[in-house]
Amino acid sequence: MRCPYCQSEDTQVKDSRPAEDGAAIRRRRICPVCGGRFTTFERVQLRDLVVVKKSGRKVPFDRDKLMRSFDIALRKRNVDPDRIERAVTGIVRQLESSGETEIVAGEIGRLVMEALKALDDVAYVRFASVYRNFREARDFHGVLDELTVEDDPDHGAERHDG
Image (tube, rainbow, N blue to C red):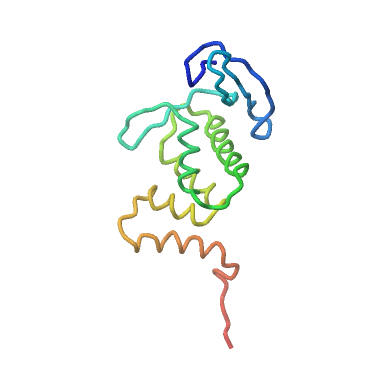
C-alpha cells in the first residue's frame, strides 16, 4: 500500500481488526520512510458497479461518495457512526447482490432516502431537498407530510370526536 504522505510503496501493517460487523478489515499502517500513520479498509467487492447518471453518462460506483452523501445529510446530527456505516454497507450489499452491474443513480438516491428516513428525520428532509430538487419552501410540505403520516398511528383511522 502506497503511503498517502510521501508516496513510498513500502508501508507496514501495525494492527488489523475486523470492521463493519465483519464485512471489512481495518488496518493501521505506518510508513518507515516518513513515519506517517494511516488506516486502510479491505472489503469484499462482489462486482464492479457502474452508476448511470440522469444525463446517461456512466461512472464507476464510489462507496466513499455514498458515505459523503450520508455525512452531508447528517452533519451536526447526533447519529451513531456505526449505524451510518451499517446503512452504507447495507446499500452497497443490496446493489452488489441485485445481479445488475449498471445501477441508475435514482435507485441509489431512493435507497439513501429509505436509510435516512430510518436514521434521522432532519437528514431525510435535507437529502430529499437535493434529491428531489426542491425549488421553493412549499416543496418541503410533501416530505414533511410523509414523515407525519408515518409517525401518526391514527392516520387513516376514522376519528370520532364527541
